[in-house]
Image (cartoon, rainbow, N blue to C red; front, side, top):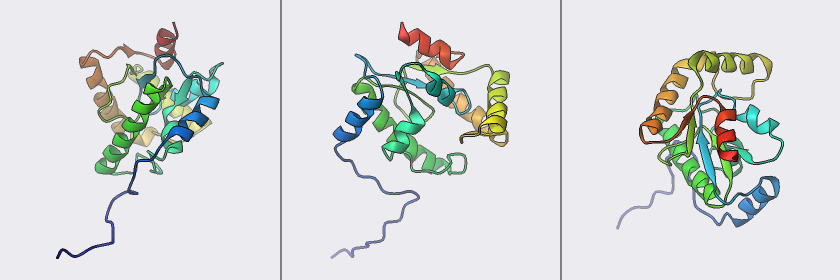
Length: 182
């Protein structure tokens, strides 16, 4: 007979799937549901939260909000997590993003493993660094800092792979959002 070990060894909190109907209904009271859901992928420091917080209508959901509210991302800071933990989080975020898209929500975020985005945003590098510096000084809300630039470069390379798969690439969040708003 195999022995039972009740100690679960994991680098992060174990996850189970549950019925998310109430969660998405609540999300639908705050954000507009569209005929077709969308996902824009952009790296940390590219202006996602800034854009979402300043939109006139609640069309776009900040992925960080969506993933934290759904318990997909339980990390305190992805820049301190190891690669395996980040990939585990990204896989969970893909599941939530996929479901939100199916329900007609528009999401802008930086977490992604294998879910094909509808668009990617890669700011010109100098502008991206300037955004990170400005946010770090003016109103730091988490995410990449100047000390994390090597990680930002790696993330940009990861995101760029989607361009090779035919995903449209934009040079600003505004440009991508305006394209899909038409």
